[in-house]
Image (cartoon, rainbow, N blue to C red):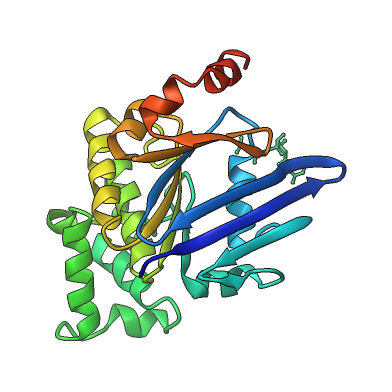
Length: 245
Ligand code: ADP
């Protein structure tokens, strides 16, 4: 697909009188990976909440694959193809890595039938390919509780991908990770970007440099500027906003 998967047109989100998002415009192409940065309180979380339907714009429109998301409930927006990963991993600690992925592949089906499915089914093959994508083949039969923090992050990203979203929203995936785990998560996101549009919110600038071709800087609920990491880092507006914190 070519063209825009996500169009945010002049969106404002007010909480009482306060505009957490203030006349924000943003576009994302099919297959694009974009990183959003910005100081605390810039509106990054509210930006994602607006895309997933957790909050409704006070003004403006959010279009996903050309469809206005106005008043569509959160669960229905997820089914349209938007998957969100929150900062802390939400995996089933007592289930194995494989079982976690299997459940995610069959979210709408009965849990017990999923756990006792026959090994030759197509879902099993899907789980096998997901295990390879997230680099956890050797951990497949371990309870998720025994994974490192970075492995849990990769498992949860795999669980999102299992639901075949077109757009992945990923909130600070490398907070608290070692350098090696950070690089693994970065490589996973780059691999997923071959077939998904992805928005990542991130503070770790080394990591942003590893994965981002284009970065959007939010400030006071609006887009301050967009560009490559080199353009952003040398932009006096960005320097002022970060130093003025
Ligand atoms: P960021 O993720 O960039 O740190 P947020 O989107 O969490 O920023 O918040 C942006 C601003 O909106 C902050 O000033 C925050 O206090 C305010 N805000 C966020 N959610 C609410 C809410 N539900 N009610 C009132 N103010 C909110």
